[in-house]
Length: 241
Image 1: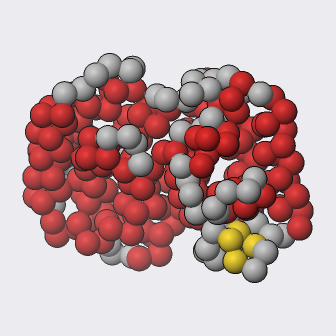
Image 2: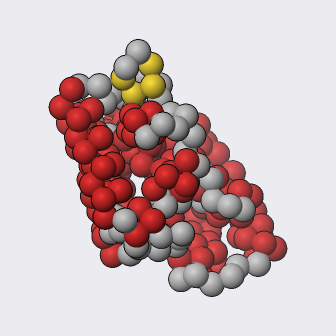
C-alpha cells in the first residue's frame, strides 16, 4: 500500500477538503464524526470523499494510509488544544509523501513513545519498558517479525509492573488515555499483538501519576503537553517515511 496511491493530485484534494472545513469552521472536536454539517478530522474528510464518516479503514482504500494512522490522527485531533487541533489534519496529511510506504510508522511511533517516557524510580517499570522495546516495538519498528509468544510474555511482565504500582493506576487512567495511542495500536492488523505491546506504557504512566495524582489539573496539563509532543513525533516519522 502506497500513500495517496502514489497520486499527488489525491493529496492535493485531501488537503483542499480539510482547508475548506477549517475555514468554514465545520471542523470541530468532541462532536462526533459528522453531525449536522460538522465533524472531526476523520469525519470531515471521509464524508467529502463519499465514505462513511466513522470508517477509519476507508483511509486505506481511498488514500493509501494505514487504518492505525487514521485512528491516531483522530485521537490526537480530539485531545489537542483547539488552535492546534484546527491545524492538525492538514499537518498530518501534508507530512505524507505520495508513494510512501507507511506500514512501519505506527510501530516506530509506539517505540518512540516508550523511548521518550520520563524516568521513574521503579526498577520493575524501567526494566519492563526496556524489555518491550527490546523484544517487541523495536524489532517491529524495523520490520522484523516478532513471535506472538514473545509479545505475550513481554505484555504480561508489563501488566505485572503496572499492578505493582496499582496505587497510582487509577490516577493514571486519564493520562494514559490521552498519551498512549491505545486505539491506534488496536487497529493494527493483528489486534492482540499490537494492543498488548503498548501495555508497558500503562506501567510507566501509572508510576508517574503518583505525583500527578496530587493535583488533577497537573495531570490534565501533563497529558495535553504529552499529546503535543506526540503530534510532533508523528509528523517527523511521516515526513521521514
